[in-house]
Length: 513
Image (cartoon, rainbow, N blue to C red; front, side):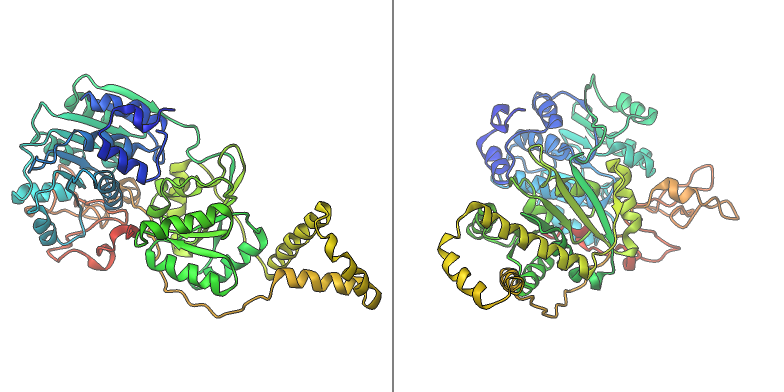
């Protein structure tokens, strides 16, 4: 596998890649980056979790000139979550070069987006519906766009965005560079490629199973308020050599690492607010075993490569399958087996099923560890440590004291006291974490249509007839309401009302690091 230094990237881009912790390219990156840097149109067939975001972002950032004061690149994504995630990765990759990028998606205040557009970003990452809204308002102009990326094109077409994509691409100069990425290649994707790409190169990386086969995956269904107690029991039962616990936000990581310390576990947190020195210090402790539990956000843990991580625990369910694959990939490395546990609240089960479908892996359900299992696990590890010392014969200086004690006390009572001392006193400190909102399952167009047409010719609530300007298009079947995909069903303009803010407010899609 090639290292990133072999691609001829400019030093500022290479520095950003190195600081993100990436060293070797993934197969999709190795095939895509050289073609993209040469300006070839390409079709990339790759599942989520294969590193495709960096595959198109790195050459994109490499090519853009910092002196360009206009929109020169456009990335289209099916959902707000993916738009946010891609925007964050582009921001990190382009930070030393000084590239300006902006995510545009439905559900966020459009006035706020218009203000941000006045700062003249060079890269726009957006969902098709909201992009069209800005184009119609003349707040986004595509006359100077040199590169277009269609990310998860099959997903966009499944959600009904074909006409939007065609409308947007027809406004971009024909001599552009176009990259299309899709997990599958159905006829409508081929049609889109034939219409808008010029002699594209085909790049295909299709693993039989996205998630690593050496990783045992299980989930525990548990209420939000019971997560912490379940985590403590799980750590005691499993007794990990090194474990990474993932929280969704910086606040969660801070609270969780502090709570674990109060319960007597050697744990520390890692997130984006830490200085480089603090981050290096935490990682040094984790690598040398001074702490055996690292609590981290997605962004902080991207690119981490620590040997010996035996367990990954998703304390909060990740927002998307790509994050899930990245998280559990911290274990099971270098041919070693690993274990990944995921906590799922009852309202998140549908989202877990979506992750299973995309990663093509059935995640086994397990019960919350019982108190007896936790105690048994703790005792087992202490006994193993005791036997290690016996076998190493490194306790010779204590034999004299041992003989004296055995003359005065029962041997079983002495050994039990030794085990208790090694285990340490259990600190039953009452812990209350700030609850996190559950992640809602991603709704697809087919799911809505499967419910059948309503009387009067309309479809379900996300597909209402709406012929008002900017509110979607009608078609021969009575029309449907456009969704600007946000991973939770998008927004509706429901009979003239404002956006449904209760379910579509801007919560940053879980990427608040």
